[in-house]
Image (cartoon, rainbow, N blue to C red):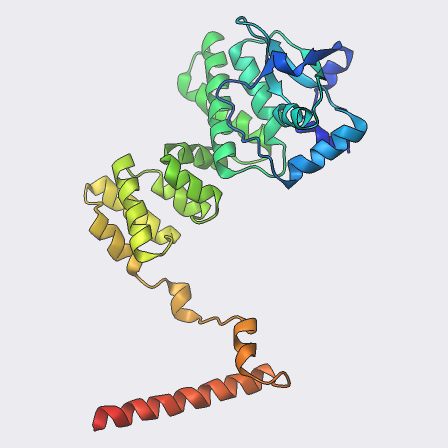
Length: 295
């Protein structure tokens, strides 16, 4: 139950920190917070749990110089408290600079199970930029070495490779409309990484190509579009031609859902009987078509 309400974890060192009750009206989201707070089924479950047990894991906030407090960890708990009509929430106040605040905010959310590709992409980018900025202030000797170590640090903290971190960060170059299609799984992750190399104007035309062809690109198709973009020849027509190509998997397989087939056969028919009947009917149709052509 605690994990469900957490949406993040308080570090071990925070055990000795004082927990205070803050009014919801004093709290506001972290500026540039990349994680969506959705009023979905999971949120409803959190509201019900919170109504019964309260907020079990305190929010982490920092003072805002313009008044109130900025939420670093606990945006979903804050929203659930609003929906549960609570007046206050438990919180730990930390006086952090921008870089440390960004890193804490990202870390407290990246450990969640259900994260959209766009959320992970922007969180990785924000955290990497913050770590690099900290390194600059620490006067690291080599920018190249510092950047490599920064990417590795982001990956290690999230349990992924540095290459995976870089690929997610590439997604931040997608225009919002394309990024939305990645989040909704209309475009797969690997092709999306390749599409991120297209110019914004080319990405807009890519959306037109998707709409015109009613198809999503495979990895190899997206790679070819990237190459065309690098050559300066990535036009709407060229992308439509690529998208209209039949993918290898579509050449090898034809799939008909079982519930569709069952409408046309007796319940007692086995899959083999259904297949034999379909072949026989197709052969009859082919012979009839041939006779009609010979008339």
